[in-house]
Amino acid sequence: MKNTLITHPVRHMKSLFRQWWPRFLYQSPGEYLADQLTVQRILLVSLSNIGDAVLTTPCLQALHQRYPAAVMDIVVDPRSQAIFSACPYLGRLFVLDKKGGWRGRVALMMLIRRQQYDLALDLRSDWMLYFIRARRKLGKLSIRAGCDLHSAEKHVAALKPLDIQMTPETRIWINPRDRRFAQVLLGGWSERRILALGLGANFEGKIWPVAHFITLVNMLADSFDGVLLLGNQQDASRAEAFSEGCRLPVIHACGQCDLLETAALLEHAGLFVGNDSGLGHMASAMGTPTMTLFGPGFPARYRPWGPSAGWLQSQDGTMQSLTPAEVAAYIRQKWAWVRP
Image (cartoon, rainbow, N blue to C red):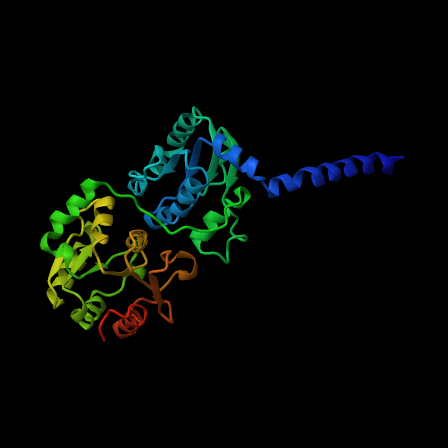
């Protein structure tokens, strides 16, 4: 009798599982259309660093393709919020500032809870979905489930329950004002062959020596008319040292541009070469051929995403051992228009 009491509920649960599970796996065309019509507001919780934030834009695009009428609210970090600010289907940006401590987080969650969402996707945390009001909630993949995927693919894989399979390219949207800024800064250079460089990174172990950048550019000088240096104010001293040894004319824009102005400048470059940093991801998102240099790190997961993104990693994991000759040979092999 005891076994019977236990078995019947189990059988009942199995029956319900077999009945309802296929409905989660497949949507008929009518259900798909109804889903499109009912999903009107979406919340995306993005990541903090600039490069990581750029790698969440394929999710944003995939959701827009699936729900073209939906408005997207996005939780962002102060460092990377500009990446999304010109998105044409953006609703509201919620800024999660770590410096605000727990009080700031509570205030932000109370603000977000005033909204009612049809769909919420959290790519950042393991806790925010508990406090978000949404008809459907999706969380990020676990480390184990996403260990063999590029970061962009891992983010989009979280959308698999929506029958979204393909990973779009990364994207940054820019304003006409930012394009005008780029035109003015570049002057007559905007129609010339520009090599953009990112000399810095977020820590010293990721930074290729300035002398190596100088040697590389001088080796490629016949394929370009000038060099555009991009980065923050901390890269200014490297930019000065580079300018002294470079054979080509140099435009020094380090510390002079915000993120969208930088993106607009990258749009004019024929090639970007830089360290493992947000600039490489921005260049790729603007459709610019991109060459990223790795010492430490995991390029299979964190390299810029896109068909025009190349990368090279040193054998011993140090930046110093990656030679200009190796980098030049890779560039010439991948982009045939760069002269030998």
